[in-house]
Image (cartoon, rainbow, N blue to C red):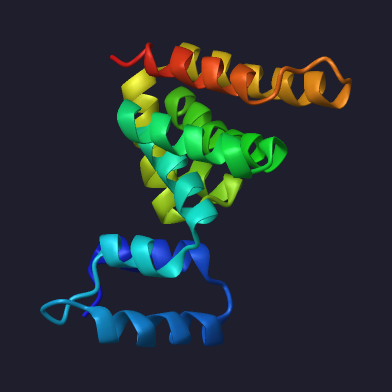
Length: 171
């Protein structure tokens, strides 16, 4: 059996049915009590870099400062800044729309092409931070990209400050 959260993660990560089947086979062998849960999916289906990125994205959406700080520290040592900023932008762009357009959320989710897992976490971030804090965060992410491309960015420290500024806005 596959827990609903685990299924949502797998659908989010794997478009290729053969790859999905292979991952499910691996997970089934490791499943404790015959149930594949989200923790098993995170632990067994991602490399360290992908796991850190997911921890950063999900942790920020849920306001888990310690997890976010740990992921940022590890990523700053070995990950590239640009893909990380893009991933944050993609998730928090959803959160911004969720915060602004709470009515008609299914239409917004569909129009943005958001998958259920990412949309659910984005809605949680919208409730946790509110539209103004998310707006400032998304604009800060864009600013980082522009500054990096023009050679005036400070890299990971600039992103870290932006992330912790958002965390400080938790309701």
